Length: 119
Image (tube, rainbow, N blue to C red; front, side):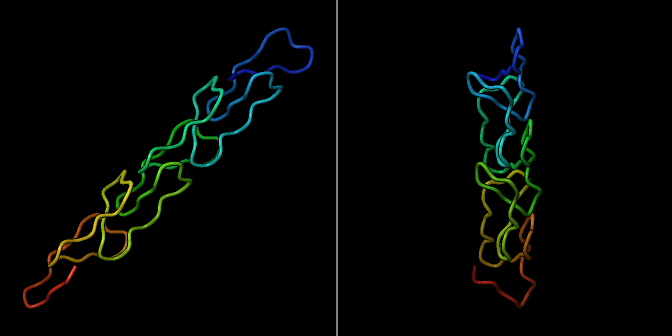
């Protein structure tokens, strides 16, 4: 796998990065969104949690801070208010009691004197 040949070819060619093929293929197929491959691959690999990819990707991109993804994701999801995530996170983390955050936050902020948050 990972190679292909057209009709009448005398040799097989490697599939390009972001594509794959099984044995006996006459063409390469793009990896689905959330997957990636290097050149000559016979299958695609799922992106790890905290990363994502578009279809036909040769690598996965890290999620920005304030967002997260589970493995095999095509995109990252914004954290809800009251949670935060650093870049490359596979989940959002709840703010502690006495702290708060807006949606898509990369950290929590302490409540001002005379206010509270019951996280």
